Image (tube, rainbow, N blue to C red; front, top):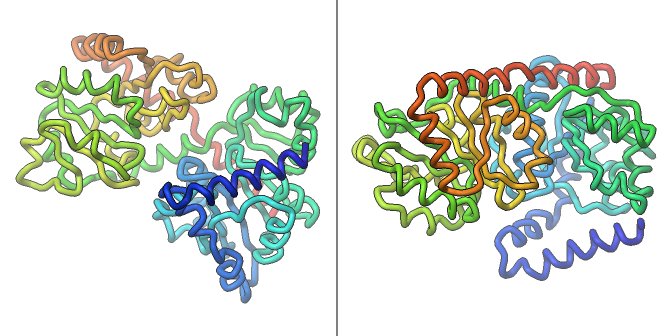
Length: 410
């Protein structure tokens, strides 16, 4: 199985290289990793002192790391931080440069790369987020006696660790010094493999969204755009979502204003065809009051835009990649998202539904019915808003548990 793993990583790299002339993200993946070890060696050749290495797959996992970085800066300011991303979209959209000392892509997982990477950066502690667990990096961390924490971990029976053919990977999983888990079911799965070094701390994203909501969240011209009207934010939507959402927009654009934040802004053609719409980059004092739809053509503002919304519709469910429902829920508004079997893996989304702050829909007709019910019953609307906010605020504190362990190890 280890041979199969090595082969799959090699094939992944080969396929990305082959399609890179025709695919922008693949081209970024290859281009930004070119010369990576030379850049690492330049950054770390004179480095001394304590260093924590934090690794995230992409920007979504970074949101789970962000509260930890904030606490590190406040409580251990002399400790240096290296942040790595696997995905180009994570690093290219990264903005919180004041929280890290070094920022790099992670070289592809191999015995040679893992050894060279760790010999170059020499961390005193490694922190991986959620389930970004690369076999050779894990094994090399263990061999070099560098402690490793997994933060906001979540496990499912379908993962390779729990498959009869995944025993080699289970050995790597056992190299983690301590797991901070999102839920009790993940703990049950780890116990079934005789792993007991864990804490069910919850998801650090709860801390992050509350931090954002409690901070300054003004977005230029959005107050002018909204005025006294009700606003629906379509957050991180894909074309697969818009088949359901365009009828909602067409039926309600006279009574509501809309903000559409596409998950990818490389091609806005689908959204720019919407009548009475304006791109956010072109929004100003003059056109904001008359526009009915704003198309967000930047990254990083969605979590703040939810603060202006009366309703939120979160995208990604219909392609098995539901976006963060906590970002709108923290503002105490009803949160809607597509009904799909893949939603079961998004624990917070299913819990929000059970708590009464979230709602799924299977079609435009279904969604319209639920919007109408809530919009026409102010008492029901306020009740749902209260449940949505309470769900988030009642589950904060995970990053404090992580920070306590970090201070024990560093």
